[in-house]
Image 1 (tube, rainbow, N blue to C red):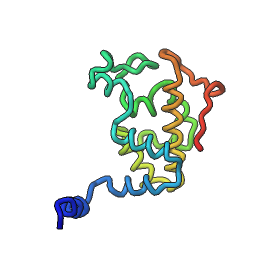
Image 2 (image 1 turned 90 degrees about the vertical axis):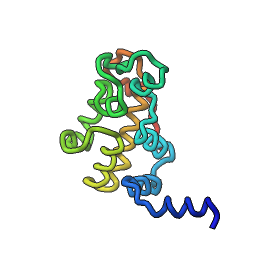
Image 3 (image 1 turned 30 degrees about the vertical axis):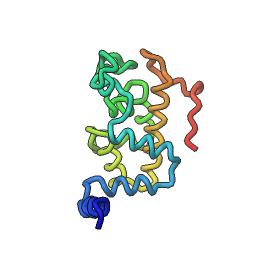
Image 4 (image 1 turned 30 degrees about the horizontal axis):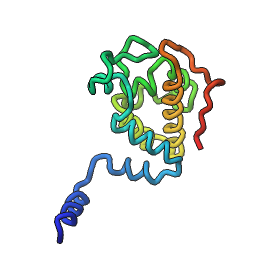
Length: 154
């Protein structure tokens, strides 16, 4: 067997800890942009302050909205003052304190394991909407201008 075949066999033989999550994500019947967004968020490939500072693109890592705390992926999607009320008024308000909060991947896996499967699509859609609202806002803005934002899921 050729080298490529051996590598493929070896890779298939190991069981990656997130393998079930990734299989479930790619098989979901959601728009491709939500799958791509989820993949980027799970792998910390979002343009947030901490990552931009680490890559020497920005000098500071604080959130441009809150202007106080470092902007991580989880902060940008869940804890920023601009998007926090969206989560507090959603079907996911009760998961704060119950779910892991250290990464988008861990939180998404928790939703998949502890809630109805259909809720994961809603969860990913809300996260994408929060990212879109945050990206459309101006630094220092406190409240999303939902009437001015046109967010289309499909």
